[in-house]
Amino acid sequence: MGLFAPPRRLFSCTPSRLGTYEDCPRRYRYVYVDRPAPRRGPPWAHNSLGASVHSALKNWFGLAAPERTTAALPRLLRATWVREGYRDDEQEQQAFQRALGWLETYVEGLDPAAEPLGVERTVGAPTTVLALSGRVDRIDEVGDELVIVDYKTGRRDLNGDDARGSRALALYAYAAERMFRRRCRRVELHHLPTGTVATHEHTEESLARHLRRAEQTAQDVIDAEEAVAAGADPDVAFPTTPGPICSWCDFRRTCPAGAAAPEREPWAAIERPSESAPEG
Ligand code: SF4
Image (cartoon, rainbow, N blue to C red):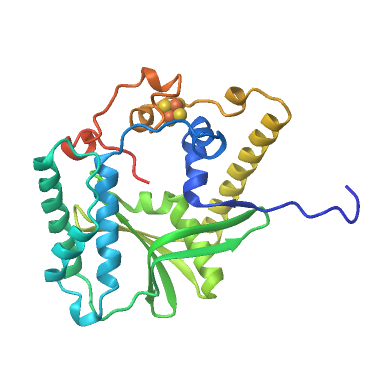
């Protein structure tokens, strides 16, 4: 390469995009590469439930502090309730009441006067390979430091290993620290169904480890895309990785490997505790 060769372009990505490739390269291709993109399956009730709860919490923090009460929650939840994916009105109504209960318990434990640094805040930072960006549910200030908060609404209880292992949370902490020029090492998963908080305190080394893996994933994506551009078979460059996630995959009906996976009803994850869908 010559002395004045142009620098390599950074790979623009979100943690979710990298996670999609790590879960299954074929799914990554369906979501980000193939155009037109293959048709997705029907919407999932658990995604609707999660999105509704996230929006209600965002809008609760958007109220003036004196209005941040539990009494405000039914109106907020109704205003942004996502109806898709439920079996019928009765199931949807039960889900609404369940979500309202989670939210009421959750906000009772919050200080309405405390202003987070950010709510659904986009953070971004470059590395030598990546132009990272992503939206964080909440960024709290504790003393001089920042804390990354992620809300979870899935069935499965979460623990410190989940917080430690979350690539997304680590990348958000990395980006927030650079963006706000304040130390950000603590990451928290707030599980609304159980009211529990799973936390992890990252070190410089653990953040660097997550970053290295993210960069390696990005490099794998770049290699696959370049191979296809050079004439490789896209099915080989983006292989399938069949497993339990296929049952929850939006492209199960397009993907040859997905056809073998048992089909789930769109509402299965909110109806049956044993059928826990992967959380984003
Ligand atoms: S059905 Fe399974 S193998 Fe196919 S794209 Fe989805 S996750 Fe990947």
